Image (cartoon, rainbow, N blue to C red; front, top):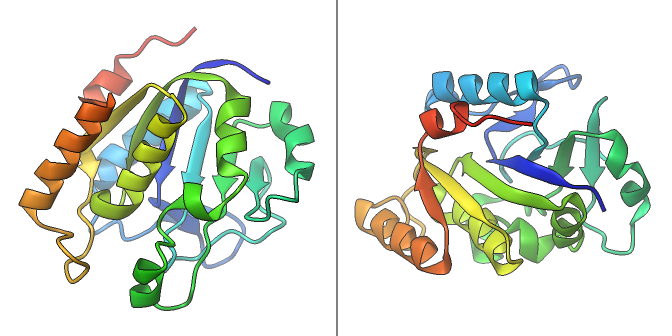
Length: 205
Protein backbone atom coordinates (compact mmCIF):
# COMPACT_ATOMS: atom_id res chain seq x y z
CA UNK A 1 0.00 0.00 0.00
CA UNK A 2 1.24 3.45 -0.90
CA UNK A 3 0.38 6.74 0.81
CA UNK A 4 -0.54 10.10 -0.69
CA UNK A 5 -1.88 13.20 1.09
CA UNK A 6 -3.83 14.24 -2.02
CA UNK A 7 -4.98 12.73 -5.31
CA UNK A 8 -7.18 13.98 -8.13
CA UNK A 9 -9.97 12.01 -9.80
CA UNK A 10 -10.66 13.41 -13.27
CA UNK A 11 -13.97 11.95 -14.42
CA UNK A 12 -14.24 11.68 -18.22
CA UNK A 13 -12.45 14.89 -19.19
CA UNK A 14 -9.76 12.94 -21.01
CA UNK A 15 -9.80 10.50 -23.90
CA UNK A 16 -7.33 8.86 -26.25
CA UNK A 17 -6.29 11.19 -29.06
CA UNK A 18 -6.94 10.32 -32.69
CA UNK A 19 -3.35 9.21 -33.20
CA UNK A 20 -3.68 6.77 -30.30
CA UNK A 21 -0.45 7.92 -28.69
CA UNK A 22 -1.62 10.39 -26.06
CA UNK A 23 -4.50 12.07 -24.28
CA UNK A 24 -6.72 14.98 -25.22
CA UNK A 25 -9.70 16.76 -23.70
CA UNK A 26 -13.04 15.28 -24.67
CA UNK A 27 -15.60 17.89 -25.72
CA UNK A 28 -13.51 20.94 -24.74
CA UNK A 29 -16.39 23.10 -26.02
CA UNK A 30 -18.59 21.78 -23.18
CA UNK A 31 -15.90 21.64 -20.50
CA UNK A 32 -14.51 24.64 -18.66
CA UNK A 33 -11.41 23.77 -20.70
CA UNK A 34 -9.06 26.53 -19.43
CA UNK A 35 -9.78 25.50 -15.83
CA UNK A 36 -9.24 21.81 -16.59
CA UNK A 37 -5.93 22.62 -18.27
CA UNK A 38 -4.87 24.71 -15.25
CA UNK A 39 -5.77 21.83 -12.94
CA UNK A 40 -3.74 19.37 -14.98
CA UNK A 41 -0.80 21.75 -15.13
CA UNK A 42 -0.89 21.96 -11.31
CA UNK A 43 -1.15 18.17 -11.05
CA UNK A 44 1.92 17.76 -13.24
CA UNK A 45 3.91 20.49 -11.50
CA UNK A 46 3.37 18.93 -8.06
CA UNK A 47 3.49 15.30 -9.23
CA UNK A 48 0.07 14.65 -7.68
CA UNK A 49 -1.44 11.20 -8.34
CA UNK A 50 -4.15 11.34 -11.00
CA UNK A 51 -6.90 8.76 -11.42
CA UNK A 52 -9.05 9.20 -14.52
CA UNK A 53 -11.77 7.60 -16.58
CA UNK A 54 -13.05 8.12 -20.12
CA UNK A 55 -16.66 8.65 -21.16
CA UNK A 56 -18.34 5.49 -22.41
CA UNK A 57 -18.93 7.32 -25.71
CA UNK A 58 -15.35 8.56 -25.94
CA UNK A 59 -12.12 7.02 -27.16
CA UNK A 60 -11.05 4.75 -24.34
CA UNK A 61 -7.48 3.69 -23.69
CA UNK A 62 -6.40 0.30 -25.05
CA UNK A 63 -5.54 -2.50 -22.61
CA UNK A 64 -1.83 -1.93 -23.18
CA UNK A 65 -2.44 1.67 -22.09
CA UNK A 66 -0.10 4.58 -22.64
CA UNK A 67 3.42 5.19 -21.35
CA UNK A 68 3.31 6.38 -17.76
CA UNK A 69 -0.35 5.41 -17.28
CA UNK A 70 -1.29 2.32 -15.25
CA UNK A 71 -4.28 0.59 -16.86
CA UNK A 72 -6.68 -0.79 -14.21
CA UNK A 73 -8.78 -3.46 -15.98
CA UNK A 74 -12.43 -4.35 -15.53
CA UNK A 75 -11.68 -7.99 -14.80
CA UNK A 76 -11.40 -8.42 -11.05
CA UNK A 77 -9.42 -11.61 -11.57
CA UNK A 78 -6.67 -9.62 -13.33
CA UNK A 79 -4.58 -8.12 -10.55
CA UNK A 80 -1.29 -7.94 -12.41
CA UNK A 81 -1.47 -4.14 -12.32
CA UNK A 82 -1.04 -4.10 -8.52
CA UNK A 83 2.66 -4.96 -8.72
CA UNK A 84 3.22 -1.81 -10.82
CA UNK A 85 1.33 0.57 -8.54
CA UNK A 86 4.36 2.17 -6.91
CA UNK A 87 5.93 3.01 -10.28
CA UNK A 88 3.07 5.23 -11.47
CA UNK A 89 1.36 8.53 -10.74
CA UNK A 90 -1.36 8.28 -13.38
CA UNK A 91 -4.01 5.57 -13.16
CA UNK A 92 -6.72 4.78 -15.69
CA UNK A 93 -9.87 2.97 -14.49
CA UNK A 94 -11.44 1.09 -17.38
CA UNK A 95 -15.21 1.49 -17.71
CA UNK A 96 -17.62 -0.89 -19.41
CA UNK A 97 -19.24 0.49 -22.55
CA UNK A 98 -22.21 -0.96 -24.43
CA UNK A 99 -21.90 0.98 -27.67
CA UNK A 100 -25.08 3.01 -27.27
CA UNK A 101 -25.69 6.00 -24.94
CA UNK A 102 -29.17 4.85 -23.93
CA UNK A 103 -27.90 1.36 -23.14
CA UNK A 104 -24.93 2.80 -21.25
CA UNK A 105 -27.40 4.72 -19.10
CA UNK A 106 -29.76 1.79 -18.60
CA UNK A 107 -26.86 -0.50 -17.59
CA UNK A 108 -25.27 2.22 -15.43
CA UNK A 109 -21.99 2.01 -17.33
CA UNK A 110 -21.19 5.43 -15.89
CA UNK A 111 -20.58 3.85 -12.46
CA UNK A 112 -16.92 2.83 -12.57
CA UNK A 113 -17.05 1.39 -9.06
CA UNK A 114 -19.93 -0.93 -9.98
CA UNK A 115 -18.48 -2.17 -13.27
CA UNK A 116 -14.77 -2.31 -12.43
CA UNK A 117 -13.96 -4.76 -9.65
CA UNK A 118 -10.46 -3.31 -9.35
CA UNK A 119 -11.51 0.32 -8.82
CA UNK A 120 -12.02 -0.06 -5.06
CA UNK A 121 -8.75 -2.01 -4.81
CA UNK A 122 -6.91 0.88 -6.47
CA UNK A 123 -8.40 3.44 -4.09
CA UNK A 124 -7.52 1.40 -1.02
CA UNK A 125 -4.01 0.69 -2.29
CA UNK A 126 -3.22 4.34 -2.97
CA UNK A 127 -3.90 5.33 0.65
CA UNK A 128 -5.03 8.86 -0.23
CA UNK A 129 -5.92 11.29 2.57
CA UNK A 130 -8.07 13.55 0.39
CA UNK A 131 -9.56 13.16 -3.07
CA UNK A 132 -10.36 16.09 -5.35
CA UNK A 133 -13.01 15.23 -7.93
CA UNK A 134 -14.19 17.04 -11.07
CA UNK A 135 -15.32 16.20 -14.58
CA UNK A 136 -18.02 15.56 -17.13
CA UNK A 137 -21.63 14.55 -16.50
CA UNK A 138 -22.04 15.66 -12.90
CA UNK A 139 -25.42 13.91 -12.49
CA UNK A 140 -24.05 10.51 -13.48
CA UNK A 141 -20.31 9.94 -13.84
CA UNK A 142 -19.02 12.52 -11.35
CA UNK A 143 -21.75 11.59 -8.90
CA UNK A 144 -20.80 7.90 -9.20
CA UNK A 145 -17.10 8.64 -8.64
CA UNK A 146 -17.75 10.80 -5.57
CA UNK A 147 -20.20 8.30 -4.08
CA UNK A 148 -17.86 5.41 -4.76
CA UNK A 149 -15.03 7.15 -2.94
CA UNK A 150 -17.28 8.16 -0.04
CA UNK A 151 -18.57 4.59 0.28
CA UNK A 152 -14.95 3.50 0.74
CA UNK A 153 -14.55 5.92 3.63
CA UNK A 154 -12.55 8.46 1.66
CA UNK A 155 -12.43 12.20 2.26
CA UNK A 156 -13.78 13.91 -0.88
CA UNK A 157 -13.80 17.46 -2.21
CA UNK A 158 -15.81 18.12 -5.37
CA UNK A 159 -14.84 21.05 -7.60
CA UNK A 160 -18.43 21.77 -8.55
CA UNK A 161 -17.55 24.66 -10.85
CA UNK A 162 -15.53 22.23 -12.96
CA UNK A 163 -18.34 19.70 -13.36
CA UNK A 164 -20.45 19.84 -16.49
CA UNK A 165 -24.07 18.65 -16.26
CA UNK A 166 -25.10 15.35 -17.80
CA UNK A 167 -27.09 15.48 -21.01
CA UNK A 168 -30.84 15.83 -20.68
CA UNK A 169 -33.11 12.97 -21.66
CA UNK A 170 -31.82 10.63 -18.97
CA UNK A 171 -34.35 10.88 -16.18
CA UNK A 172 -33.94 14.17 -14.29
CA UNK A 173 -30.32 14.61 -15.46
CA UNK A 174 -29.09 17.96 -16.67
CA UNK A 175 -31.45 20.14 -14.65
CA UNK A 176 -30.45 22.65 -12.00
CA UNK A 177 -32.87 20.99 -9.59
CA UNK A 178 -31.18 17.62 -10.00
CA UNK A 179 -27.76 19.18 -9.57
CA UNK A 180 -28.85 20.86 -6.33
CA UNK A 181 -30.29 17.57 -5.07
CA UNK A 182 -27.04 15.71 -5.76
CA UNK A 183 -24.92 18.43 -4.15
CA UNK A 184 -27.07 18.18 -1.02
CA UNK A 185 -26.87 14.38 -0.99
CA UNK A 186 -23.09 14.35 -1.42
CA UNK A 187 -22.72 16.94 1.33
CA UNK A 188 -24.87 14.81 3.63
CA UNK A 189 -22.52 11.89 2.89
CA UNK A 190 -19.54 13.98 3.92
CA UNK A 191 -18.27 15.51 0.68
CA UNK A 192 -17.09 19.12 0.61
CA UNK A 193 -17.68 21.49 -2.29
CA UNK A 194 -14.59 23.43 -3.33
CA UNK A 195 -13.21 25.56 -6.16
CA UNK A 196 -10.28 25.35 -8.52
CA UNK A 197 -8.60 28.15 -6.57
CA UNK A 198 -8.82 25.96 -3.46
CA UNK A 199 -6.93 23.24 -5.30
CA UNK A 200 -4.32 25.57 -6.77
CA UNK A 201 -3.68 27.06 -3.33
CA UNK A 202 -3.02 23.64 -1.82
CA UNK A 203 0.53 23.23 -0.58
CA UNK A 204 1.84 19.76 -1.34
CA UNK A 205 4.64 18.13 0.65
